[in-house]
Every structure is written in structure tokens, then in C-alpha cells.
Length: 110
Length: 113
Image (cartoon, rainbow over all chains, first blue to last red):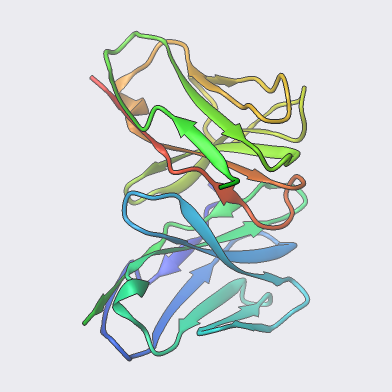
């Protein structure tokens, strides 16, 4: 399987704290994306980082990419109860279609 | 609201029956995908389509077939359902194959007894 892995599998934090999730992948990539999934819903795109970028910001989201380690991290700052969801990374490459990781379940306690 | 529509939302099916999950998009995207989501395994690609008239196999294609007669529709068929096909199925699309953002439907929850 070419699937990536997120770490940790589950994360529980207090509202206002920062949440960090990590993603490791196996192949060389064109880009890496992060998606959010609320319980029982479809996935929603959050942010895309290209293979030649090292860091990207969008609102309270910060994504880093280290292609030498084949890893990425997603930081959510000042978390809110509404951020409670599962978060997935997905990679694309010339050979493989969008390959998703196994996800991190984030719970933000009010 | 533009996006992807999947039907049915939920279905219970007897083993051996034929089932078609429907997917329609109104964004005129070229590429479409079917994923299944199972607990602990994330999303796995079943089949994909680069453009109308072409389809390809993903990671777990066995027991499934697709067609892409036009740009908007991408149905997934289980010819003879088995219990291991119990899962949540997501249809997705992107403007071009393997690039940019994926847009997802809300999923079809299928239980095969």
C-alpha cells in the first residue's frame, strides 16, 4: 500500500491550545494537501503545499513540508470546539492518484 | 449550491445483490474518483476517470465497476455485493487529474448483510 500515515491517531486538547498533526508518506510527490472531515460528512479541502514549498499559512493553519524526510505537519493555532474533526493528508504524484493517510481524530474540549 | 451529489445516502443490501451508487457533479470537472472509507484504513481509491469516456483502476478495484458516459455522472456498481464491501463510499472530483483540490460528496453508507 502507498498510504501515508498521520500521527497521532487521536488528539484531545483544550480550547485555545494549539494542535499539531503529522503526516508521513512514501513516494516522491507533486504536492501535499490537508483535508478535514466532520463526523458523518464528506472531506473538505483545507490547504495545499507544493513540493518546492517548505511552509504555508492560511488563517489559523500552518503547514510545513520536509521532502527529505517525506513528512508534513499541520498546526492549528488557538483551537476552537468547532475544529473537532478528523484531519487527513493526501499526496499526489505522477504515478499515483491522490493517496490519503489514515487520519488524526482531533477533539477540542470547550 | 454547486458540488457533488451522491445517492443513496444509506442502503442496506443483501449479499449477492447488485447495487449502483450514483454520483453527479455540476462543476464541469474533468476528473472523478470513487473512494471507500473504512475505520483505521483511511480512504482507498477504487476507480477513477480522467475525463468522460475513460476510466482506470485504483488501489482496491475488485468487485466494483464504473462508467463515465458524460462529464457529470460517475456511477459505481457492485455487481454482486459481499459483506466486505460494507463501507462508506465517497465520490470526489477535481478540475484536472491528479492536480489541485478534491471536492467530495457527502458519502453513501452501504451495509451488506
